[in-house]
Amino acid sequence: MLWRDKLAFVSALVLLLIILCALLGPTLLDDLATRQNLRGRNFPPFSLDRGWAFILGGDSLGRPMLARLIVAANSTILIAAGTVLSAMIVGAGLGLVAGYMGKNISQAIMRLADVIMSFPSLLLAVVVLYVLGPSIPNMILVLAITRIPIYLRTTRAEVLEVRERMFVQAAIVMGAGHWRIILKHILPVVAPTLVTIATLDFAFVMLAESSLSFLGIGVQPPDITWGLMVSQGRPYLNTAWWLAFWPGLMIVITALALNLLSNWMRVALDPAQRWRLEARKTKNV
Image (cartoon, rainbow, N blue to C red; front, top):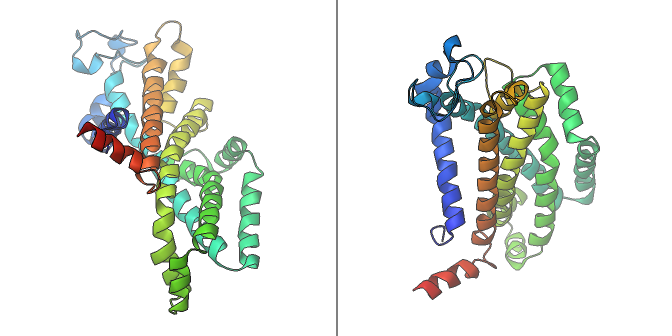
């Protein structure tokens, strides 16, 4: 089904390449990405005079942009993945309890979500990072807190509908425990929706991290992310446009690939809509 949707297939390949760069980049290119060469300051792109690493140009300290983009992918993907995974686990867990248990427990959990959502997410991130200090763990913590209500509310709404279905009622009649029903019967039905939301949220978290780094309260050197590279390249927009252009382009490409792939996943993981992809297969045959 993925092969038949060309846009989704290309998006998956792009994301796979980015993930490989994030995993292998720091090991293979860390020294090259941090080595300064003042003779190559703001070296223009599309030139091989200084080797393949400078094909995208050099930054203000003579470091190759290509190597820095590959290494920066590690921190960017780490923050986005850590944030989405943490928020999904906590939010989905609370949502399962709120949707299945009694009214009092549900109301208490939903008020917690309302409190979190009452603060603007970017403002909350600015305040917390200013107090705790900018670092990757703190970035993951504050962004995860702001994203928990999304998974909590979605999971609760799904559970409220699923728990009335016949197979859940049959499990209750047969004496199954609450946690067995939640984990074995309800969670598998809710999981596809959560995966689709997580794919979309991954792109949102990347943009949020880039915004915080651009404001100067995100990840700090020697760590590096695409958002930090955009921030560092802002003073050179008139003289060395490539310093901010390439990391900005990587953010756009990754976010676009995630959105295209999430659209495919929404159809592929939904039994009620999967027939559209299967109909394409039958037509092609």
